[in-house]
Length: 479
Ligand code: ADP
Ligand code: MG
Image (tube, rainbow, N blue to C red; front, side, top):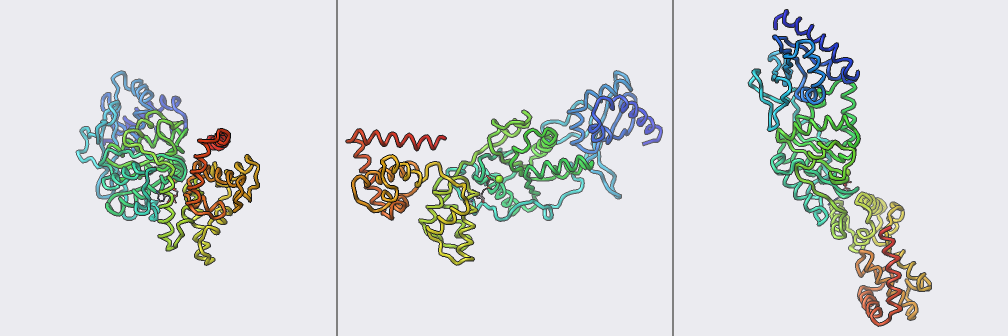
């Protein structure tokens, strides 16, 4: 570059800056405009250097009108901008690698950027290359496919996850968007995918971030003028896992940058996995273009686990900790903890603590005690206790008598009725229902259910009572 040209371009650029400055806010000016370096002026073409591909796209999307205005003003109506984008800042031995674009075209949408009369070596983001062996993926090795129990509640999500872990970026599940309520296993599953890829494809760079990480890194980078490092880092990742993406809601700037990172990664065949607490169609506070990207690949939900899945999770966890847990205790827990699986973790850990450190035997008694002490807030909508109380009140009999062994008919009928509702409104097994009524066995419970059904057929009053009680329990469920 000869000095005359460089003086020229600097002067021209300074004139442009005078026009641009009043048009953009100070922060944007510092972050974006100030980092543009005028390279050369050639007739009506001013070439400016920008630090990255991302930076270039950002300018194209946000600052084209004001840049155009400035260039037209300074260079005349035919004035044009060309960008020179640094794709490799080089080192002492090798000079920086650049690609050039004329302004207004944008990067081409079907893949990589085409160099325009510049270098023919396009080496995107080789800048400060990350080492897959040393980069901290932020994965918890305890979350694997092995200990992720498959059930109806998560089958689609799990198999999509497996497919992605075998061929990241290659399947049409890109992005893979998993959604579901609290504690249904989203984090476990996406971490399992990450761990699997790290194991089978060790040359891939895997990165797990929760949204708070992303946001705080972003703000940090913005404040310290490290935007370039920030995006360069993300753009080198082969598998990006963004957990709980709903936290991006309403964060315009963070969404902007994520949008660009998303596009870049997606275009270069990198895998993106996201989780959210609701499906993209219900996500509020998101730019439409970002939401539409979320739907490009596969969206799969995880539901609250059913009884069998919970049971399997309990058994697996206890097994891996080398603890035997009686069937009835596992069933009791699977039934009782129906809020979410994180509460279940707490209960199981506490049971483990009692069993291993206090050397207590894990039985129903202990399980009930732990459940009571550890997760007070756990309440099923319709619990056995609630059913028993409601039925005893309704028939005006003593609760304790109804739960006990008294064989009088006026007690037996309420007892059988309560058993019937336990079967209808809880997931308790017959054996466990019997257990809650003075330790009766499952055949007694079956007999009770049959009696109630018979009486409903023959006794209109009784049928009416059952219907009234049913309403009480149902209103409790929908409340
Ligand atoms: P989310 O991210 O959806 O809120 P997590 O992934 O944190 O839920 O799951 C909560 C707990 O439940 C974790 O300890 C996780 O290991 C466990 N868990 C959830 N689903 C399963 C499953 N299918 N198999 C085994 N453990 C599971
Ligand atoms: Mg989670």
